[in-house]
Length: 472
Image (cartoon, rainbow, N blue to C red):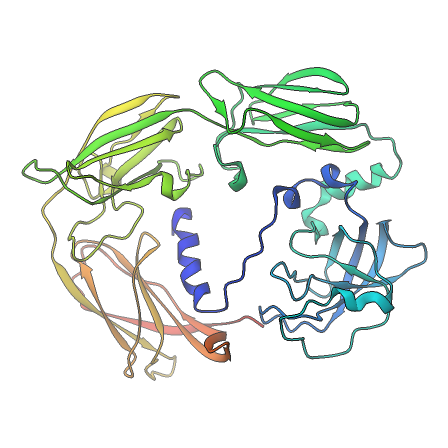
């Protein structure tokens, strides 16, 4: 499955598994500890040793974890060996910890005395059942607080150990990448080594250049507020300037996305040369290791003249075509077709685009429409029993083309295009609960994935449910 299709696939199954609740964190939640150290009030390394959380994936108030304290940094009084951690229970940012695992626990709130800990319980959600909360000081953390397993934050731990000595000078650093959407920062965007960075603030004016990996650093910076700008020939930063606060003995971090204004324009035509109207055209990087722009920026429908136009396309090598990143529609009869008009990706031509280059010469010629065939999918349990009411998906390139439930005989039929490779998966829910009138699954069993090659004429696929899973 391609990276482009993974998220859309996951969302379909998650949607039927639980109530969707969003936790929206600002960029600071994912920034290095050295940038937010002055805002953090509680910080320690500890091990989760006990909890009343049954890990069923649902938001509940009153969840607690008992932590032993191995290395206190901030907000923990000398001699305290245990604290009770509330993982922002009863909120959409409710965190989850694993007993027996060590964490760097971070909190933007003060440690609460045991008698005042009722303040951390949020109403509106059912209270968790289980053992009563132990007596002791309470620390509230959550998905936006920066708490992480110790193996994921080695640099943060090294920093805070030096920070306590007061011997570490402040600095400014970050990455410059070809990327216009910094909110969705991704390290797979190409580095921009030609960028020159300039900071202005209490320490005066300092400049540096990004290295081959797009990284820059300005050491020995006086604490305070700085304005940062980035310049690179042919590129514009997503914002004209960036304001960063540099704490004493800490760091200021700015990851900057820069974009060029390249474009790809072309036409999709039928076999007879007439315009192909209202068809989905997409592009993506030919190198799957490079992150693509957001899907809505690289997908569009052809107009009445069969034309398409993509703007703000970054430099690179791209594949362009019809339904190459969305599943083909049975009623259209058009298999995934790459420029200049091939259905085999190995024969597709690559569009090479320099910074700010305008390509206007693409013509994608469609082949003859293909017919639709009915493929029957049967789902069975390992003992041969039919699996009724099982979710079954038919996919093209990892993207879901069809999704339906099996009938009482464990079967479902899909209208699929001839000459297109499909893969099939199934999921049967083995336990569930009713929440606000919705049936929500807890445990399930998945089938193996079966592929029907483009050249296959088979009319039936059998899937075996043999992969038990659970949210508990």
